[in-house]
Length: 122
Length: 246
Image 1 (cartoon, rainbow over the protein chains, first blue to last red):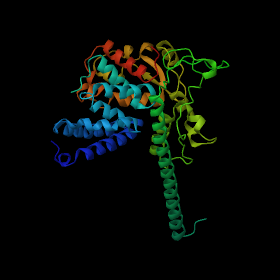
Image 2: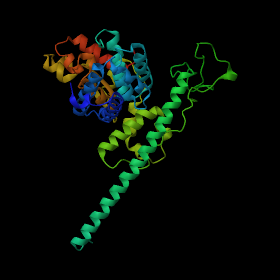
Image 3: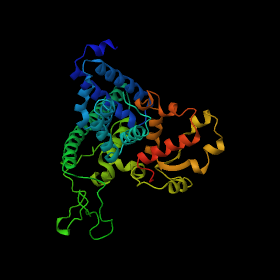
Image 4: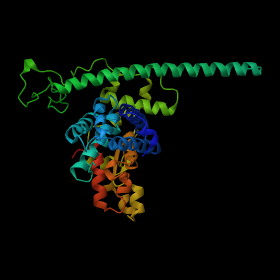
């Protein structure tokens, strides 16, 4: 487990998750893959830290469903699909339907992969 | 004419101040834009709460009542005296496009895509005449092309055009690694002409780690898969990105 993340409160981790997702979006827009993947692993570490906390604190990421940055909404939805499947799916559907950037592709492909059983959130 | 080191240093200092000011102006404009987008997002959320649906059927463009809703949110026909334009969504303040372009090419590329992604096809309506975003007009127009059939996209591939790229439905590099023939990879069936920006974004998606595939990238996931499976994923990506009409 990441010891630096271990020391942070759940609220702080949610805040950092939002910041990283927003920063990752800039790189997604111009296809800077190396940076996108770096942020993927940083976000995953936060997600795992939250999951390990009593009561699975990934649920706190639900607060980000309303974030103005579409990538924050997509990343929060994907991180909570296992614990709030209906609500998280709805977030992905709205992004896939109404957005125009790379988030539209990611949200749409997540839905396709969920429907095909390739994507099985845990 | 520059006659001394002092003049050169003075000129360089002035340039540095000028670049700094330009950057500050851009940051202020970007902040205003960001705040406007927060208001825009809140208003759009409210609109959805009260039944706004961008896919609600409308009278086709070119007719007298073009753009007006033909049925309400429940599918009931709308009476003429109650019709509203679908575009009349309470969106709060319109987002502002910064007057000055960002100081570096990279920031400019990010900014123009953020603006396009957030404003949608109405970007040119929001832009002032002579705005720097017109430097990207071909890429922007291509980005908002309506979806086309696979046949149309394949035919377009014969006619390269500014703002567009030729895209391989089955991703070229990994297909080659897996032993697919060049003839199959470069076949007209596998080539489509799509928006340059969307082409880059799809390539980015293929190379980005994803939860869907246990942390693998779609490209890694597709290694060793059949041509048919790769084609399916390629077409799904085009459809999900609003490029392919199924």
